[in-house]
Figure 1 (cartoon, rainbow over the protein chains, first blue to last red):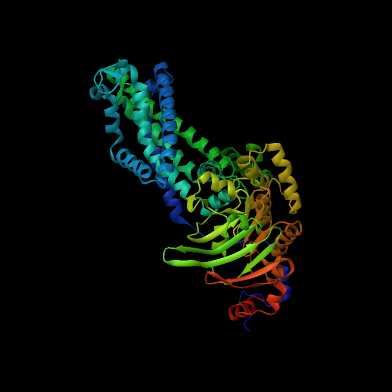
Figure 2 (cartoon, rainbow over the protein chains, first blue to last red):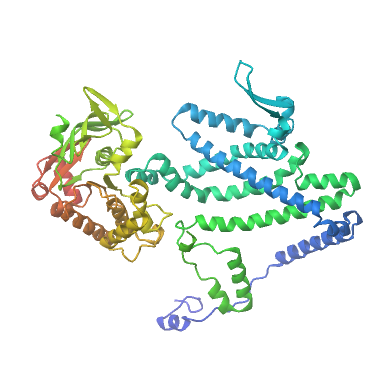
Length: 333
Length: 259
């Protein structure tokens, strides 16, 4: 047996190693330093360019960021996003259940709907809704077919005001995408679950509502958050197609007059970023709620994550406390 | 055989057949189970045991023979010489009277143990929540899980999950309990707890059909033992005698492997 190997030679020596921390010289990573310096340089250069370019006109941006028109546009954008997503989610759920129906006409109809709305650009669909009067004429009437007796008559703009046109345009398109997301969620729940529900005597509809969909939510929520953020930005197409004053529409109206295109586009971008950031944050909490029962411990909320991060840098004692696993959120129900 | 004669039995099967495509899984199964009787079915995998249990609970439709549960035809209604397929609602009502426990527990993972036990009575029978909660708590205590009411299935061991599944089935106050290999997915040291609960249940007078490989359970608790292979019941008899002295060659081979 050689004597200069690192292997322990006797039980005595192994015992003496127990509990001792290894103190070694860390390996060098020169490549990491080069990359860090390069990225930092790019960031500084970008900030410098943004701060000194007069065309960005930060003064105009800060003066008008909280302008009444802009705030109205922000609210309209949020409202439009909310309504369109409600239409999209409800419609998507119905379409997903329809696609899984054993009746060929029912599943076929859902398939055709998805085929049409997913297969044409949403911009074109919105242009259709914007020109709805060109399709129906300026007046619409409900009459008894082939008799000419008119029951109800109104103008097309009365029946389909810009907000309704925008919500229908965005929501009907969204329904097609949500249908596939919901269907994927439903299919992700094992067959044993519906059999267990059936054994208890639940009907198919009750099984879907109480057993399948709540579990499918865990799969449905993340892409739906994605869709909501996408929808928030897609509402910017509404200004160009239907005269509804969402954020982008408001901004384009202003710069059409004062020609300060870049600063006003910056204003819109800042607001869009702020809104999507809030949505991203909210998604954490929804995911956490639907994770109950799926994992033994729930993932920490962003706030708890922040606390844990600061706790760790300040004092190790606090960090240990803050990263303790969380109990189930039984109070959430 | 009329349904009037079938009323003496909790389950009565006559030449029951079932095929999946070209594969004939059940080739004429005959069985009589009296109320309060515990019937244990053993046999090799693929022999049709699980399929037969699923037929009793309407999870599979039989395509030959006749099957009665508590005097009523399974899946059909007979008027004159014609059979009418039952509506989904009627099938659901009949299922609610039969408890089923499967190999894979299939607890609802998004509900606590207590909520799992409550959901059937509340949603299917329209029982009030407080009443269902009281009964559910008592049932979970009965299966030895009085301290796990608020636990989610992922926080329970396999044996605990299976006992919650039994409590969930019992909450519907079934007149018949079907067990489909209830201990096959469990670690050996957890099997005893589940069998203990089943033994208690048998002693309380529940009618049970149990598919299992636990020969000890069959011998001690079963009133009748059936050996099923290739879609038919090859041998049946009093459990102790049959285990000690199997008549059929296939039964002998099978028992020598599992004992």
